[in-house]
Length: 267
Image (cartoon, rainbow, N blue to C red; front, side, top):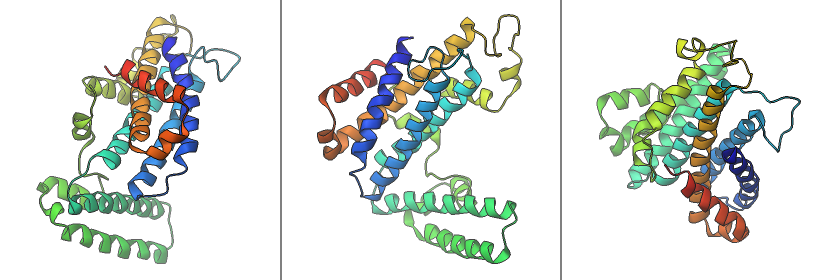
């Protein structure tokens, strides 16, 4: 598959970009974007590894595993939306502050829930409760928070969402065509959650859904790779365009390839 060849080489370039990214130590949005970028590239590597006909990761047999490909691809989409939210969506000073207040609040709220459900000692949980109470008070004092609608404010305070915007709202702001976002995301989500749409179409006769070679799973795997190319190449292009230090450390051929791929899979 041509798309797989493009993805394999994009992964090679992504490693070089990650090395160049190491020179960026501040500001905090650049550091956080670097972490999200690393997560995306690791996920891209896993997608390549399970893809049939991969030239980088050799296995004893090709496995046509659309279910796992769907899970990894949905993760890449969600990571990119977080990446774009942190890097590109900015407002006034209070809005930008609120972004990080909510991100940190959600981070600690999730840690609290994990420790609580795992039976952590009461004194350890007490530190979380006090910290969360203080963080919530700081969020509520931010003027930008008060300008949000009531349901969004409730969701943030209950630790349900880490962002001011929903993923769909972020997707609508992306600088490239995202007309496929809703239906592709729904397709991938059904695979992730093992709904009837995921297991009812399985056919042991033609191999669909059981790892054997078949045209249907091959098409969906191709779709996953194409979507991954679109989001990963655009994340790389944004880093390269905005960070002169990164641009200076990259080879011209690599820079050209990233630009070509981001344009090639823009639709």
